[in-house]
Length: 89
Image (cartoon, rainbow, N blue to C red; front, top):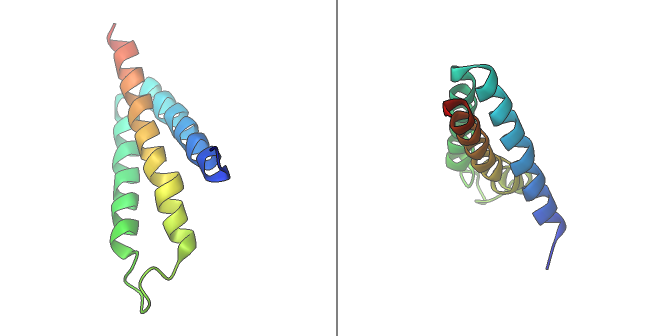
């Protein structure tokens, strides 16, 4: 069953894939900077979640991490890899 959250997830993947492809296409370091920054944000948010007095007290941050940033990170990896492959040959 297709849910609204799946639409958010798919949109995040497509948007970040296009951004990753464009940045890598423009500059060899553009994709690396995007991936490094997104990885740092995801790791920091994952480590921060659940540290409050009631555990998972901020549902908005959990949604941002699990339905936007992590799928977006996967999409960015895909976009950078596609641009790298295309530039190679």
